[in-house]
Length: 365
Image (cartoon, rainbow, N blue to C red; front, side, top):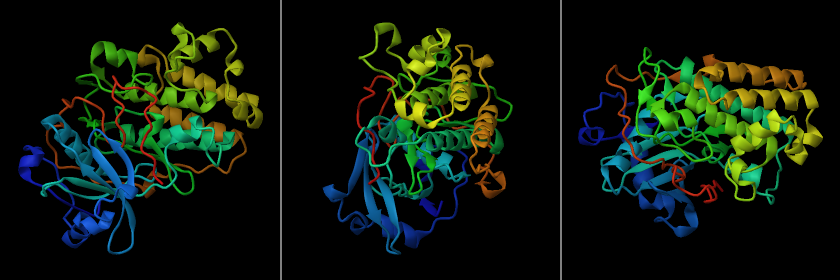
């Protein structure tokens, strides 16, 4: 992260180490000129935490600037939590936080600008200019899995994302995946296996085991990723009223099709046309394992990432390996893990467990 100013009162005594502030850079993004005085034409999207604008820094860089809308303490915690999490991560498939300003009247976060919208849009919008081919879907799945594997097992302090869904996956200028929205994510001690916390997430992606037990584990992210994998396979939405009542949930719809050996009846037409039957079947079986109702029987994200890379290699692609030597994790000062008491999932886009799945996500244009 390029720089961050913050107040100790905002951080509420959390022992975190942020990088040294770059005040000249901060002044450039806190000036109203960066967003043309918050011009409505610059709005990229709106969520529960505030409005995101397309902005330009004094050095000419295009960025996304989130102007906060803090209504209560829980939203403030989510806003700061995202700073704490993202300030410790530098991974090519995670959206980068350039900086923040938490001491001004209006809190701001400044991200890299991601030009090609969300994965949700490319899966479900029939009018997108570039439909996703099978090779692109397989690569994007592998990139998301690689990022989650890094967060879970390669980072110095394990991080659970807590709200993996296709609206939280952005696509850059080369259509590479960027995992976003860390407002409700949690870092945990290396000797912990779970956090007992209020249930948060998005219906259709939410781990049923977490929903019933209030215990958040790394396998909760695995379940949510499994739903994204099924979206990529089928082109169908996570929750749909057009399906039968028992199959409104895409996960249930998919698992029923697998059990009845008719999964190819629900595969997206482009996937069926472009993909090899063995590769499609391999991804379908992997998704089925990710969606196991017993979290202990789900694979880890590291295993998922390795299997997807293997499928890409068998598909004849020039596989791009996840080279962890190229990523950096800036360890926070040892202390208590970030509090797990936020009350809703709201960052790049607001889709809490009680919200409609059809609300349009933030589009980076």
